[in-house]
Image (tube, rainbow, N blue to C red; front, side, top):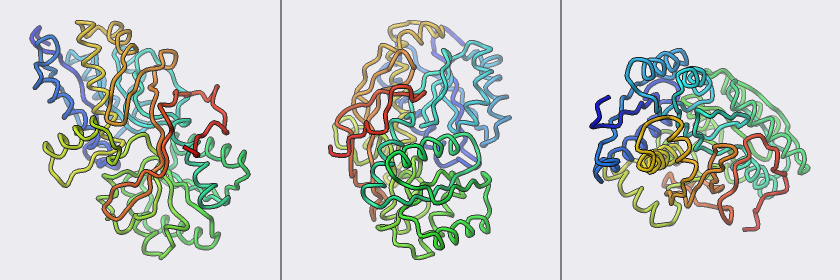
Length: 377
């Protein structure tokens, strides 16, 4: 790295099972870097990204993280999306004393001095979703998810919340990451047979998109028995087809339809850069915000030294498109804005509920209580 630039790594999959959502991460990252550089860079020097595509392969994530840190003279990485990819790079990042900026919602139960966590923890999305489903749809919930750590941990916590509030989990099924059509059809048949009041889905990627299409083809009333998710955002609805998704529910900290000036600027810039048909989402927005958080911390640190950036970024208070965010220094996670959205005919979401303000992250669920939900707001 020359003294005239700030070199950083970008490690998101733009191919493979999670290409749509991770491309959103990539685009949010790219837009923010371009904005910082257009404004003069940081201390007069541009941020220069070194970007690789791991293709959704965990071994590739690990090898490319090592390449960035050991060969490319990088110690800051914006990257990883699925929990499996975060786990794949974590030991490499720690061994090389790098700093990973991780923008995805995830299962929590993790702390590392070498990670900045900017996505939602389960108390910032799952608690409110359980309450909303039980109040508005009924007590019998069907769980289906991909078979890896995030769905299993999300379902474990969701089950605890649902049952604590008098609900019932009528079934809990786990599918391969690359679940085929026959497997997905068996889930649809099971749902038709059991007649739950709502579906909580943590299937991801192409199988999730097929599952939503099959659900529509089965003729199930989505206004009465919706699929509820923590991940199925605007970009994937565009891929599935909005007409097959109306009525489905997403619990997230950001929607394109959030109303504030910062989001209006973000949406406008995103569409101007990538095309009017593109939508912003809970995938692109945290990736975008974390680059701006990094740039502000870098301006004060004056160095890419990992410890200095870590110290400075925890002091940040930033008006992001989702609303004002800041760090909880004890956990290295962000205070975020829980919301519930209902998909509508144009592929965007009506915000049916939102917390009255940012909610403190509780990745180990040590302080959160199931009753600490604000659905009256």
